[in-house]
Amino acid sequence: MKTLRFITAGNVDDGKSTLIGRLLYDSDSIHTDQLGVLQQQTKQEGVDIDLSLITDGLRAEREQGITIDVAYKYFSTKKRKFIIADAPGHEQYTRNMITGASNSDLIIILVDARKGITVQTKRHASIGSLMGIKKAVIAINKIDLVNYSEEIFTAIKNDFAKISTELLFDEIVYIPVSALVGDNIVTKSEKTSWYSGKALLETLEEIEPKSNINLASRFQVQWVIRPKDEENHDYRGYAGAVFSGKYSVGDVVKIFPAGIETTIIKIEKHLESVSEAKAGENIVLHFQDNIDISRGDTVVKTDELPKESNQINTWISWLDNAPLQLGKTYILQHRFRNVRVKVQAINQKWNVNEWEFSPAEDIKLNDIAQVFIRTNQPLFFDSFVDNDKTGNAILIDETSFNTVGALMFLEN
Image 1 (cartoon, rainbow, N blue to C red):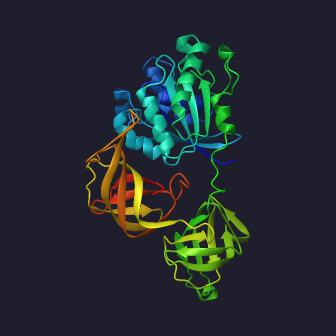
Image 2 (cartoon, rainbow, N blue to C red):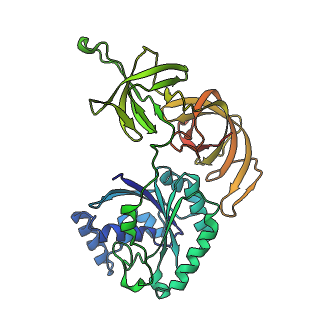
Image 3 (cartoon, one colour):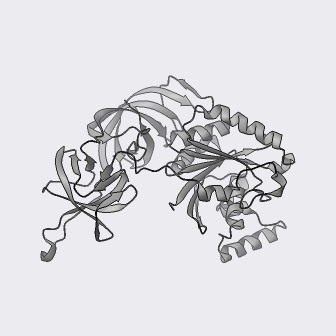
C-alpha cells in the first residue's frame, strides 16, 4: 500500500502536536531512547508525558506556545507507512503550511470542539484545497471538554460541510477526538458510542490517496546515462521519474522542447527490463532514434500533449521577506527545467481569511495572488487542476538563489 503523506493544521492551541504525539505514542511508534528522554524531561517538570514535545523540537517554540517550522515525522503500522508534516497555526507562517501541504495526500484539520469553525479553519482548508489535496479529515478535538456531546460534533460537522462546497476535496471524514486523553485516536472510544465511524489511525490506514496513473503521461529527463566504457559505448538511456500516467514499450512519444517524435524501445527499472512503467516509478527510457535530449526535456505520448506557452496565468504564494518586484527577472524551476521569467501583472490578491478577491499593487510575504507571467522560452506544462505534478513550479531569485514563490498554473 502506498505511503500516506499527510499534514496537520489548525489554530495555535488546537492540539496539533499533541495529536501527532498521541498517534505515535499509542501506536508504539516512538523509539525507546526518545521515550526515555521525554519521560525524564516531563518528570522533572512534575507532569505526565508531554506528547507535544515529540514534534516541537525547539525549546524556543515551546516557550512561545507555537510550532514555527514544519516538523516531519515518520512512522509505520502493519498496514502502511506514514510521513507527517506538522505545520504552524499562525497566519504569518502560511508559507510553512504551503511547504508541508505541497507534497501531502491528505490534510487533518483540527477544530476545537469548544470554539467550532474559525477564520483559521477556513484558511487552512482553503490552502490545503488550493495545493491540490483531495482528502481531508476534520478532527473535532477536545471532545472530552464538551462532555462528549454528539450535538456539538454534529453542529461543527454541518458548519464545515457548508464551506466545503467551495473547496476541491473529494472525500471528507469527520472524527470526534481527544488528543490529550486518546479518544478515537488509535482505538474507538466507548465515550462516543454515538459515533459510528472509525478511529483516526484506522482511517489513515485505509484511505486511498489520489492516484496519478490515470492522468496524462508525463516524464521529465533527470539524467542522461552514457557510459564511457567500451563495452557499453552504444548505451544511451534517459533516467527520471514518471510523474503521472504510464509508459509502455512501443509507445509513440514526443520530446519537448524539440518537438521530435520517436518510439520507446526499452524501459528499465532497477536495472531490469520491464514492459511498462507507471506514475511514481523511477525508470530509464530508451528510444528508437538518436535524439539530442538533455536534462529537463519532457517526454509525453503524442495523443496527450501538454500546454505550450510563454505567457501563463498562475497562482503564486509569496514565500520571501522581500516583496515581489514586477518586471524583475526570476528563475522559474519546473521540476528539472529552468527558464527565466518576469511577473508582468498582478491580476488579483486572495484574502484567504475572508474568501474574497481584491485588486492589488504588491505581493508580500504569505500573500496568495493570481499573476500573469512571461517566460523567455516556451514552457510545456499542465494546469494544476488537471495535473498537480506538472502544473506547479517554484520561483527563485537569480541573485540570492532563494526560493521566493510557489506557482500553481491556471488554465490560461
